[in-house]
Image (cartoon, rainbow, N blue to C red; front, side, top):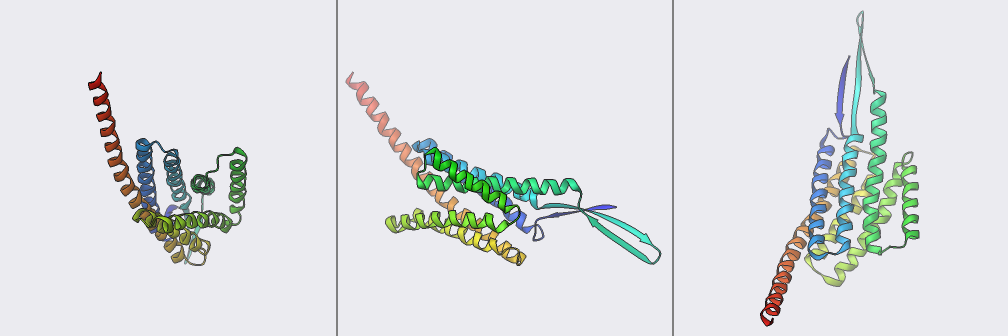
Length: 247
């Protein structure tokens, strides 16, 4: 009797990409939090929480992809039988991890949606949360429902950032637009991921690239806000010195 460990659907490469997505999402969250600390804009705090939830979700996704099979070797005269079975505790772990991945992932993108729509009424937030719970419950039996829900959210986000790019035509605006466009395409591919493992890999790769575009934007934005904060502090110090000198 022996155990066989399998990590991910594509020789573990997909799990490696997911680890990278976790790291990038955490860095995006940290940069967003630093920007919030400088300019005190609440949206950046919520943006930070959104990507922290996404990072947590991919941690559970890796756990849900983790499989351990019990290999039982039975020898008889001139015959060798090998029986594979998955322990019950692994089935429970996979199921719980899958549900938690769906919850945290959808919650992360829902926060982004609420930020852009400027939804602050409790009734609307409750409605969106209710619909998200329904989508998660249906995804247990029909996984494509989960991805269709995310596609709808990402279509709105992508359209919003495209309009923002048309209005401003800056490097930052196009980076964010491309990032969410790649995330949208990634989830469109994910709907068909059961057809072939390669489609699943393409989807994972596009998601990682989208996150990297967003990280690039956050780094540029952090530098800008840091310089802005230093100038603002310098002006404040000068005013303080002038007022002190008058006294």
